[in-house]
Length: 151
Figure (tube, helix red, strand yellow):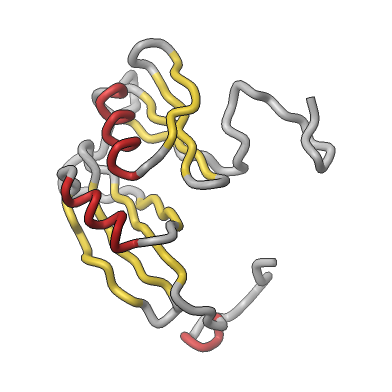
């Protein structure tokens, strides 16, 4: 199969160009929590507790993987990554995450670059930043230098 732009398609893998693979000690519990808390959609389950592919919004994906060999979940006191997800309503997501036990790292706040953001930590210690566009701001207006602007 091919995509509309002539590229190859494989229905066994998520279609986005970049797909983070996050390690959790309990894959089924992570999938249940991520779908209930962040509204992600389980797309594919691989084994009972090995991996799962989740849809994120209209065009994103994440793979939830089990602990094995060198794959380990985050450890307290070390931040190795932050997953940024664009949403329509940061305040609603923040409240839902708080009510389901997410550790709030940063309450919703408006940024000078036109985004309203909050940060939370999930049940395994992965850090998530949720962002909602509140205004259109030129990168130059807050000190950035456009190199190859986004379309």
